[in-house]
Amino acid sequence: MGSRARVAKGGMSRRRALGAAGLALAATWLGAGAARALELVVFERAGCPWCVRFETEIGRIYAATDEGRMAPLRRVDVDRPLPADLAGVDPGRFTPTFVLVEDGRELGRIRGYPGQDFFFGMLDAALTAAGRPPPR
Image: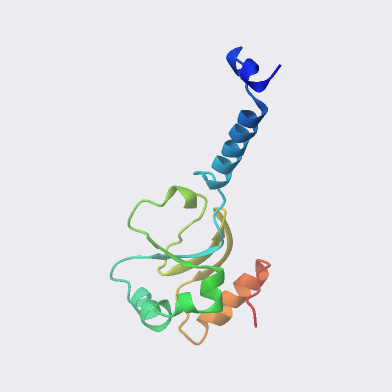
């Protein structure tokens, strides 16, 4: 029996079944439940002087660094509802708080901004502890 006959009788051709399976797999990979890449989430709030200092000293250049390419910066305002994909991450009481996150799971944390002399050393230590040492 050809594929046209199967379709006419209510069956599904092999080609359509493979196509449907491929679409389902792509939806799983790309859908709302898809894994998120490693990112550095900064929990901040308006009027936070240490948040402003971080932005002035590091935030403007962060994306161009090795660490910024490995773990892009994502800003989250602690005075707004927490995004659903970060429901399992505690933003902490102090701002800024930097949290390495992958797939909604915390891998490392820096509480407060330690200043430009220490920030990258602390971030590199957190990345290394998470099994992702930055290239050197």
